[in-house]
Each structure stands twice: as structure tokens, then as C-alpha cells.
Image 1 (cartoon, helix red, strand yellow):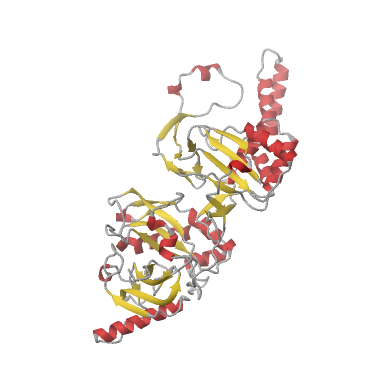
Image 2 (tube, one colour):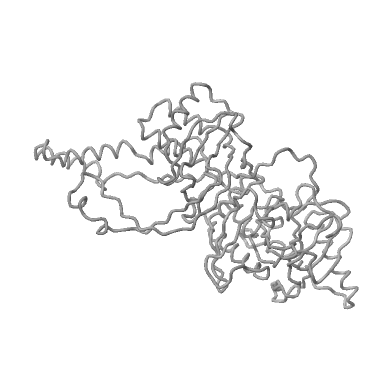
Length: 523
């Protein structure tokens, strides 16, 4: 086993997500840890043995497992910091000027307090060898920070005896979060960004050209001309590296699942995102606002997917290039609300993103990249809302995917949380006959998404889950001709256990027809 231990000496992490400077990055991305090792290598002489070890590390086929506790984000505070001094020889006037006379830039630093300041990155099936382990251990000892300069760390090569069970493991199918990882060629790319040789050469020419005590005027002019000739655009800089290779990670589940209940055409592994108020008149959004939230969210994701492959665009838009609806499944949204509890009020805590079960892993990864680019929703009079990931080891009950999918064991009884929009209006006029007709349409909708035919369907105006508004108060879905679809709540009973997510009816991709399991007695 190969394992790296990291202790955050200040008890907090100071590092921001690559797509948002307002959210702290936790757990640390494997690519960020690799960049810290590479920086220690470049800044301490670039030992060839260290380079060989890093190149071996980036060639490992599987990303590391991560054992990390929970983190509590700190309030984001705006700081005003002086700009960096100009490169080159020091100037007395600049150095003696008071700090208040220098320009100050607005900066924010995302931080989070850690429940456990020690984390581990491990490769259980990798053996580095004694010589390479000694080199890696020495290189780890040179690492002083991971992330911001305030994020001080002590890093070492950990022994197998001190490793705990991982909390996050690479899993593209069950992926809940996306972390940056490294691939062959990463070290070479970082070396180009570091640009050590050109920067040191330019600094040498600048210092020697301005050294009046040891150099005559002709020599200084010659050095200055050489510097301008080799660097006509000014001093060479060091580029901030941008690693954009992501790997899906899921929470570690000990043991193996031997029996999985039959399910629908949708994957049971929901990608859960939280919704938190950034600004606006409302503290929470209720289920009645979910359709508008989903509409705006889908539009925002589509606006960020212009550079994605055509298959990814179709998965997000549900249409092909000609605008024809896709025959198969595509991305669906499930509002995750506080329901099913005596004190439930039905407010939306987050959103579950649902993929077709047969979606290739690479397409899923590309779609998740497009989704990650949207971290804020502007909903007009409803205010602005932040979108975040659920990184807690024990998420709130209603933000757990298995609560909504009953995966893997399944459930026999399900009830709608949002009304099921019917494909066509009922033809029967008698109330009893109309309810039987609607029950038949809902049963057909279940078969349409790959579920076995329900043993019974009870059509009702109210949900069996506490905290859910009655069906008549939900906004109606509109057809293309402008008419409104009929919708209703329902309770479904199956002859065998089935797993979710169960999304039924015409609006199943837009937050309607979301069903949540009941217990075996239908409660």
C-alpha cells in the first residue's frame, strides 16, 4: 500500500474550489496535493530522483482513496491587501513608502474548519518499493502548504497501520463529487508553468544591469539591452496552472451489495446539490417554486455547454440538432424537499440530478463538468441562490439519495411528492370512472420508464408524505398548444420491491411526478 498523510497545522483549510473563489475546497483534490509536491520539488533544486518518483505517481492508473473528516465553511470575509512589489532590484522610494499609500486589491479567502486535521490519500494496491518510498518521504517533508499560504501542513509517507477506512473512493457510476486528478504529462505541464529557467535568467540580467557598484556603465547598458532583446514583452511570468481532468468520487460503502431490486430506466445514483439563499426576500423555496427553479437551472447549464460534445448537449437539452426530442432518457431534475416528517414544511433543500442508467461513464463525466460551472441561480423575484455540493459524511436526511430511491433493496409502496402530469386529459366524465382512467394512465407511465406494472394505483389530491402541498395548488404544465395538463398525486403499490428514482408522467424530467418510497405497510 502507498499512502500519504497530511496534517493541517492550523486546524483549517484555506483553498478555493477551481470554479468558485467563494467555496472552500474539501476534501482536497488529489491534483492539488500533487501540485504541492511538484512545487516543493521545483523550489528545492529539482532532484532527478524526486522527478522520477513524481512521474511514476502521475502514471498510476487509479486515483487515490481519500480519508477525510468533515469541514465547516467559515464566513467569507473580504480583505484588502497591498499589491505585490514590482519584480527586479529594490527601489528605496517604494520600499520606504508607507503601506497605506500603496494600492490595495479586494481579495476573499475561502476557508473551512476541520473536524479532523489529519487526512490520508491511499492507493491500496500500489507498491512503490523501498527506494522510491524513501524519496517520496523526503519530498513530502519539504511540503509546507496545500492551497493558500495560510494553509500550513505537515506531510509524510504514512504506514498502513495508521490508515483508516476511506471516506471517498473513485467511482464514476456513483459519483457525488468531482475532484481534479493527474494524468501522465502533468509534471511537465507544471514545469512549463513554473518557468524557472527564464525567470531566473531575467532576474539575473536585471540585477547585474542595475548594479552600479560592481559594473561599469557600458556593461550595465549591454546587460539591459540583452534583457530587452531576450524578453521584449517584459519580464517572463509564472502561469497559474489549470488542471481540468476530473474524476468522480462517491462515499465509501463497506461490503458489497449482493441483491439489487429491479428499477427504472434512471440511475439510482443521484448527484445531489444544495440550494442556499444568497440574497432575496425569501429564506427558503417551497415545492411550488421548484418548476421555475428547474427551468432556470437547466437554461443556465445549457448556456455553459457550448464547448461540450454533441452527445453532452443532447443529454442536457433533450433534443437533437434539428430540435427533435430524444427518444431515450436524458438529464432529469428531482426537487429534494423537507417532507415525510410530522414537522415537515415542504421547503426545497436541494436538487437531485438524475442520469439515464445506461449513460456511458465518459458522457456522465462531461455532463457533470458542465453542471459544475453553474454555482449560482438568479430567479428574479425569488432572489439569488447558491448551488453547492454535499460533502458531509452524514448529509441531512432529505439530501440522501437512498431516501428517494430506496437503493439497493427497494420498496413496494411509493407516493408522489410532486404531482404526476398526465399524458392526456381524462375522457371519462363520471368521477369514479375518471379516477380509474387516471390510475390506468399512471400504471402505463410506470411501465414506460421500465418499472413492472403496479399492482394498484390510488389517485388522490394529497400526497401520503407529510409536508407536501395538495396537487391543485401546483402550477400546471402547458402543452405546445397552450392548454394545461391535468395532474394528480398518487400512491403506487407493486407486487415486488422496486428501486427508484421513480419519475412518472409528462413532466418527469422537469421535477413533476417525483415519487418517494413508503414503508412496507404503505406508511
